[in-house]
Image 1 (tube, one colour):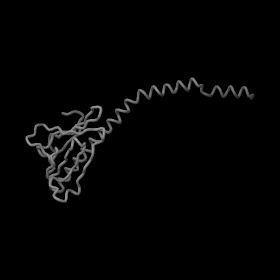
Image 2 (cartoon, rainbow, N blue to C red; image 1 turned 45 degrees about the vertical axis):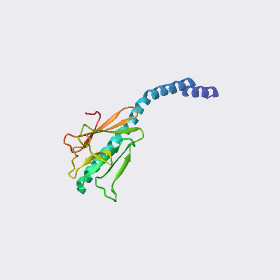
Image 3 (cartoon, rainbow, N blue to C red; image 1 turned 60 degrees about the horizontal axis):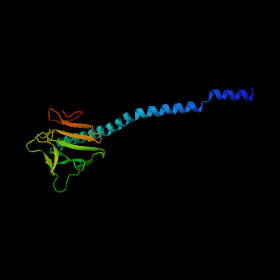
Image 4 (cartoon, rainbow, N blue to C red; image 1 turned 135 degrees about the vertical axis):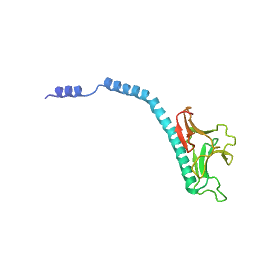
Length: 172
């Protein structure tokens, strides 16, 4: 085998610069097409994750209300972007099991009241009240709304049995 033959074999197996540039161009095109879908996926994950976190706190409130035999409130501070759970009658010592959470910085939380005569409040904030039997107080707001910066929303709506809330893609 001569040197010339070895070089020609090597050149046949290697990629040319033009072929490499074409492959990279195709990768750029495919990535640019997939990037918006990936961004929507990530955004949707933050919204869904926060909705599940609020729902989990609601379940914890119901469980605590039943196990302790006392009303629990899930309050929402729309302006501060926070919410929490604590016993309705915390007393002077406060509630050792109280929880305070903050909404993800890309999201907003809102309470949608459907004309309750005296909406449930806690420390002048709208609140969902879980009674000692685990039901939701009739003056509690029927819907919480989580919205992201692009305007997509998830609603946490009261179930027909008034026994809790569920995540919905639409307001109704």
